[in-house]
Length: 469
Length: 108
Image: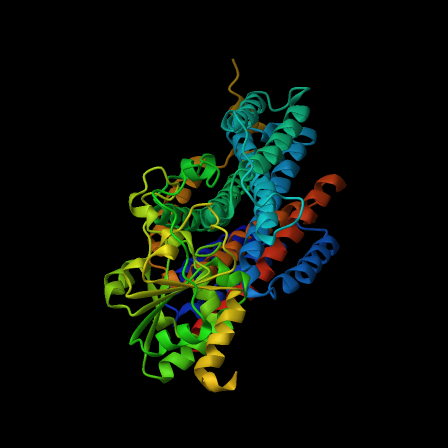
């Protein structure tokens, strides 16, 4: 009876999860997604909890309460911190899988050796490797995104790095094979600990050489790993619901990784083993041109005279928390009958969809947010392209500088606009350390300063006219 | 030569009788459904999609409950309890923040 209840609950929960993801295809239906997801989860939890073999309820209540205590504050972080929170939750997902795998192995070792069949032990090993590497890898990624002091922001590389990384993983897998072949040998427990240790180490090593611009891809890959570790747990526990839900998560991470890689014209292996941002040594071609700086008054005038303004936001907008000021600027311009569009590059920011969420937070209608491929044909008609803290995604070098790490990456054609206004925090080059010739083009004018402050000045200028100063 | 899986079947019918092939089958089909559904997700919603799938993959909660609540040795249950805490955190924060983000898109 209880078996049938569990099976029906699993089928119901799977269906609800599929609907939940399906409704994400349109912002209008998207909020049903959460309702369906929560219902599915509730059904799954209750059906498991009321199985007869669950006898210790106190611990469950305690752990659930602790989960709420930490989960609620984590859901209230500012939206600029969403990439870190996401990475952190991948870490929690990996940890859960790793710990359950470890528990199941030692349970088998000490109490039911016969349960450690080759297939089940393989699943346990896969679960533990995936789980623990996701755990430390995601913690590192979260640390880099949060700019924790003792985690280097810049990619750290050393000679033979890939050999070391692949070596560590290979040893873990080899030990895994040994444990599968001899699950209950006297040394198997130690070998298992070694696998855990190596997976923990591999997660750290994997993320050390990765820099900020690659974070959208890396977060997506870790998302996929977190899903796959849940799948492995499903195989271990003979639970189809874990397999289906994990597979949905895994495929979501996979699709997002592919989209992110494509948006950077790079392959998976290149992202994971390519150490972006350190190879760039080529100096600027030809003579060094100088920036031309524009005043706030001049910039406001340029904007006022435009009929189509395309705003290109990047990570700099997130860092400066400038999205609300951008909204005010949007209001000032649309009030004058100027068409304002936002050009969103798939990898702008630190995670997929990062810019969209920030702009939506500032109440900018999502119909004004336009994808790169759709906006590019309109760029020659654009009067002013306003670049806010974006750099590599508008760098024309991606089109023809062969040695550049961003060569071949599709970009937003800001340089084709009649005039370019670029707001930049400092005169330093962008993340990848590449010079951006967009900034020294004849039709480009720079506004140096914190994005929030500069846009605030622009808004004041447009609202009050020059006389107020 | 004794086939280890036969021994396992005799000793522990619960786990060894599992039809792993049908599990693999389910995995492959679920992956295809996932790929089909996710490909249609609006590009505006990739960030909430990721927090939603975080919450959904915290279905590991089911395994954690099974390990924490069953009559197992204390050490094993402690591991399960930590896993349960971690998954529960993901469920709560994942769904709440997804809802928070989606609300912003719905207003318009």
